[in-house]
Length: 263
Image (cartoon, rainbow, N blue to C red; front, side):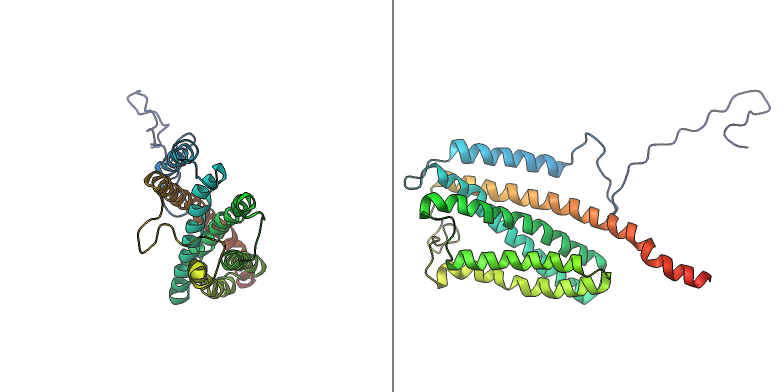
C-alpha cells in the first residue's frame, strides 16, 4: 500500500514527513545554507575588523615613516601567508607524486591560487609603502627581486595547469614545478641576511628578540591570525569548487570510452 492509499477502515493516511536533507559539499561536509555563515567565515571577518581597528587607531604612528608605515600590518602578514600557501603546494605536490591521489593535486592547485592572491597583494602594497619611504616605487634589491621571481614562478604554475588539459599529466607536471618553485621561498627569507638590501632585517624572528614595541607587535600578530584564517577560508572554498569541477568533467572524459564499448 502506498502512502496515498486509503485504508479499508476509512481513515486517512498522511504521507510521512521526510526530514530535510542538508546539502553537502563535494568533500562530504555539510554546506552552510543561505544566511548561515560558517564559523570560519565569522572568525575571519571578526579578526579582519580587529586588525583594521588596531592598525589604523590603536598602533602608534611610526616616528620616522609616519602613517604610511601602517601598510606594514597588511604587507607583512600577506607575505608570510603567501609563502605558507606555497609551502602547502610543496608538501601536497610531494604527496601527489608518492600517492597519485587526486585530492593532493586539488590541494596543491587550490593553495597555489590562493597564494598568488596573497603575493599579488604584497606586490601592490609594497610599492605604495616604498614610494614615500625610499622615493621610488620599485628597486631591484635582493628581497624585491627574489620575491618577484617567486610570484612569477607560481603564475607559471597556474599557466601550466591551464595549458595541460589531460588530468594525470597536468597533476604530474604541476607537482614537479610546485616543488622546484618552492626552492625560492627560503631564498626570499634569507635575502636580507645574505645581501645588502633596502629592506630592514627581521624585526620579529630576530636572535635578540622582536624589534617592535609591544602594541605594534600585538597588531602584527593579529594580522597574521586574520590572514591565516582568510587563507584557510579561501582554500576550503577553492577545494570544494575544484572537487565539483572534477565531478562534472569526469562523465565527459569517460563518455567516449563508454560509447566505444557499446558499439
